[in-house]
View 1: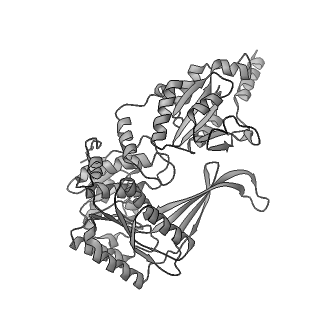
View 2: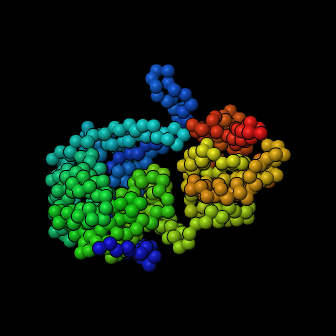
View 3: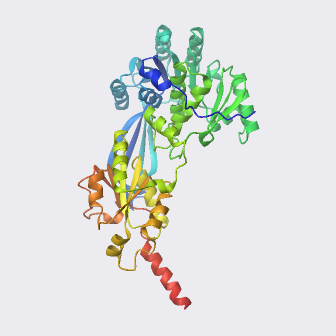
Amino acid sequence: AKMQIPSCENIDLISSTKTGKSEKILVIGDLMIDEYISGNSERISPEAPVPVVNINDETSTLGGAGNVIKNLKAFGVEVDVLSVIGDCKSSFEIKGILEQLQVGISGLFECKGRMASRKSRVIASGQQLLRIDRETVNPIDKETSTFLLDHFERHVGDYSIILVSDYGKGVCETLLTQQIIRIANANNKRVLIDPKGTDFSKYSGAYLLTPNRKEASAATGIHITNEEELSRALRCLKHELQLQVSLITLSEGGIAAFDKEQRIYQSAAREVNDVTGAGDTVLASLGFALSNESTLDDAICFANQAAGVVVGKVGSASASFREINQLQESQKKPVCCVDKILGKDEIKSVVAKLKMDKKTIVFTNGCFDILHAGHVKFLETARSFGDVLVLGLNSDDSVSRLKGPDRPINNEDDRALILASLRAVDYVILFDEDTPYQLISNMKPHVLVKGGDYEGKQIVGSDVVDEVKLVTTSHTHTKSTTNTIEKIQKVASTST
């Protein structure tokens, strides 16, 4: 029977961590580097029908099982890793990041000739164009497996819980995975696994798995489209793999679980921007909560909240206690678009709090007289450059001075309300000046976004912000308020 579980408002996990109650957790799995190469694309190559990207930013971060580690470190947990790297540049980078995160690496085996996974994503104007993978995916050899197993057997008693993040890159080969589960069970240590592939038999005997709907369907052969099929898949996984708990993540549908009875925990997400890394967050959050002696229901509720934070971000990310608390608070009252329209005094306190929470603030501005598809696409792209988008909106007097006495068509209240109703826009603030320089100076946002037509021009406020982004959308040259007005006037004149 379907049972909805309430949100985890009463879980006292934060205080338990602050008092040092949380024990050490071991993460086993495939480590990798996630690289993001960003730039602008304004032309097609004469060599082939592909875009030419002018690179202006390159960043890299720990990925794969490293996402689980980063989530645990965000919760203040002491973490050790059991994994394999090679002798390549990416391997040295992985080791360096782990040391910076103060992760225990005595179980990190360096295998000569092996290439650590590196996923390089090329992004232009917020759109991923391609991904380049460099890696060794062969199962680890016997020498490597023996090292990992011996190390695990000697230290298994040090950990409160074992988390396995299998990305199918060769670390979690069948025999090693089965032996780890056997040794852990013999020492009364629970093993939680984020599985990979279609054959889950190597995970038999684990405490629980965290497959998503697609993975569970492939592993069970049950096409999950309704609650009955979901129930069958949950039971199939539990019984065939001898799990203590059968669990399936359902993206915006939440998390379904079955131990003695089936229940569905509703998603905590307010909006879904990117599901990348959500599975890692669920695994880390479950492990953290269970290691703090939470009940299974409370642990899954907490994982749902953490995943709800992460899917609201772009790219692999982690959730902090502060962000989880903020999400819980936001769920207590509906968000009304009128509440997103702020005055100059209100925006100061909002910006101060956002900066205290280490949010990346994006700012853009304009008249937005008659909203069209070009505006919407522009704002969605602008929002992708940070955590919060603040839109400075020219007042009626300001628009009239800039555009002429017949403008605006829509008054400032109507324009502000329509813009505030867009998901991409977090806050709207009106300004009376001809330019938003004073507003930008007071706010000091991190990123200033303007249209691609500002290329080579002096941009007001660029001296105040950390970064300026120019956005060119497919609608830039075909959609405009002026064109819309001219079309309406033309139709009106022909009809008379």
